Image (cartoon, rainbow, N blue to C red):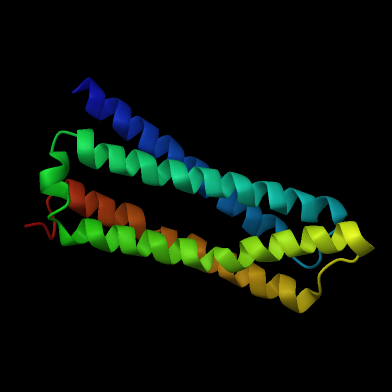
Length: 151
């Protein structure tokens, strides 16, 4: 029982961290607010977002293997596979903003130029898509934990 509590706690902290970093990216990635300091900060936030995403994945996997229900039960559930698929889709969507942040920082260091308004809006839109898709993950998690759509 203690292990289950610690695993859940670690997973929740990782999820909350992920939400904080994606929210911070969304808040800062606006054409009207973009300056050299924000470009640098977006790069650091994106790296923290990646770290939080890895922590969410690892703590989630730990819960499936060492949690009360065990891996045998979890890995038979289509809802777990749906959650993982959605998590991967969100990760794939995050690639374009990540590469944009890297490109912006390099461009800033090389020439001092900031990205164009249209590009910033495009990246922000993808960040917002990620944030909104993320809302489905805890919903699927709560269904899974309570036996909804399970085998």
